[in-house]
Length: 412
Picture 1 (cartoon, rainbow, N blue to C red):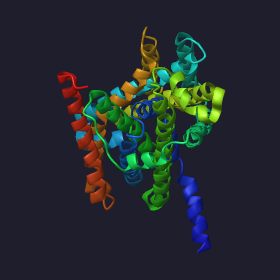
Picture 2 (cartoon, rainbow, N blue to C red; picture 1 turned 90 degrees about the horizontal axis):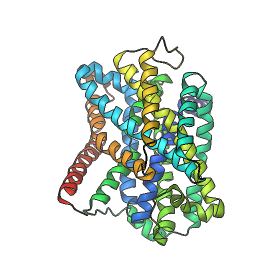
Picture 3 (tube, rainbow, N blue to C red; picture 1 turned 45 degrees about the vertical axis):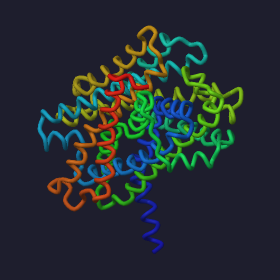
Picture 4 (cartoon, rainbow, N blue to C red; picture 1 turned 30 degrees about the vertical axis):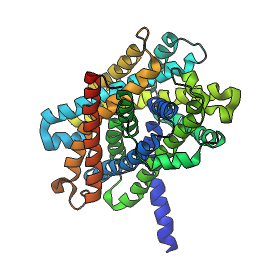
């Protein structure tokens, strides 16, 4: 029994990573900003949306990991093999739009974090873009990535701040289990954004690719499943306390988030006069990590789906498409943020809304693939998994239709 227990621990340590790393990357600049605005504007109301979304996140991430373990293929590659180039183009077009929006969001986070100290985005964004490009194309990004991931421990400050702010725990817990809805276009869009920043399209492609890259096979999958569920749980905990901290501080004081400095007020119960510094470090770190990872995941997904050579170990001449996609994504994200009068906070939140609107495209393909017995054998979805993910997919489509109607009819 001891031997089995010891082997189980070793196997978990061997396969752990994809779920936890994806969770850390999920709490990027757009995520921090979107959860903060939700808490600042609506107090604890969005906790029920978050709770349901995190449960579905765990299911969707588990689907991605299971498909990777069974097939040893990436999501884009599976879509191409089963549905051909035309449908692959449609699926990956949705991914590209969402990823470009997320990349813009993260460069906006880089700019916003340092504008707290009056450093112009026209200095920080070009420098960040050049440094990130060289790290991936010419340097050793894996080492740097580990450093970035270590600094995601800063997210734990929201947990402490949320507790020190003395929130109304009874109201918070009641809000978490009592769904609320407001027929207002701002509320509807923010709901889509919260879902879109929690279950991002790129995460599913990254999760499956990482499982395949680590060589996780279905015989050891039970250990990978623990990693996936743990990652989703950590995402949910951080997001929960960001909303609680901002609800207990910003919402209570009537502060709306228009700048990064406004959002930093949520950390005052912990950091006091150093709140802005702590928030800037956390936002900058999260933005820089995701600004590198998301374009990289775009390049990996497209190259894998269409059979192109994949870097980073290869030269530009050996993998021109891979490096071309990565370079284009970096340049696009940086250039858009340099547009005059671009509102950085709104840009980050709108990017999450775009991800939420496009997420159903990815979820539908995933559901079709994971329930295909010729691909998955005995490892297809359970009925409850299908119900949960289809319900989220339909809900997002309905919310998008309501948002369009709200825009046309002028609701809210």
